[in-house]
Image 1 (cartoon, rainbow, N blue to C red):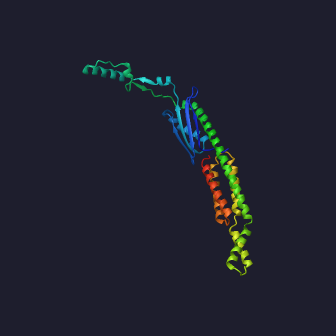
Image 2: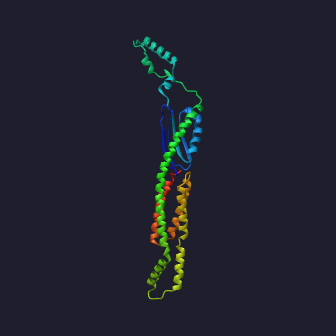
Image 3: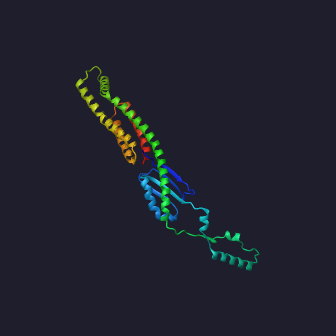
Length: 292
């Protein structure tokens, strides 16, 4: 099953789940990783990246990690700065003495002043968080993979329908080619009759010219190679793993054969179908860019 490189997953924090994790991925030629997380998780960044790359081989991945703390933990991390409070009280006393203010500095006033409380930095070893964080990361990555597989099925269905349309166009081209020599001969005979009038046509020379034109416009090899590329494309589309680059390469090969068929074409019907093939192929290439 193919996977799209575009996807999204969000693991919200709960009473049981300490971490809130959000992952977004978009198409990219290689693997590119961007992480936003608390500074305390900085030492774990390489581990987080390696784990992510084990699950996602290609794409630009943006991950945001938040450690959800409850109110008790937040309150416990606040430390009263007694020296700052003493400074504010002394400053208020001097102001009253010098300017005759009657108001006293109250608790409510102190709580609005800066630096009365400081937040104590945690000094815990981030490695202790790795076990719980790893489990949450795996959950998020699995959800993202599922999302990308769903998107991959949609891409696959669209591409398969376009490949089928191209196969039908190739059949029409092949049918036109089957009577190509006779059509070229009739066309040349009509043109020569118009030019020569009552004069006799050299049948041997006409036969040589027809053979030359038929050989020049023969696209049998291109049709065979095009069919082979289309069959291989369909086979790879049904496989799992990293097939995006190979599918992109096959698109280039199919386009090359279609261009050659168009340049050799002597019939309007073939030219029309070649244009149709190239139009569908361009849409397929746009879709393939999103496949892992």
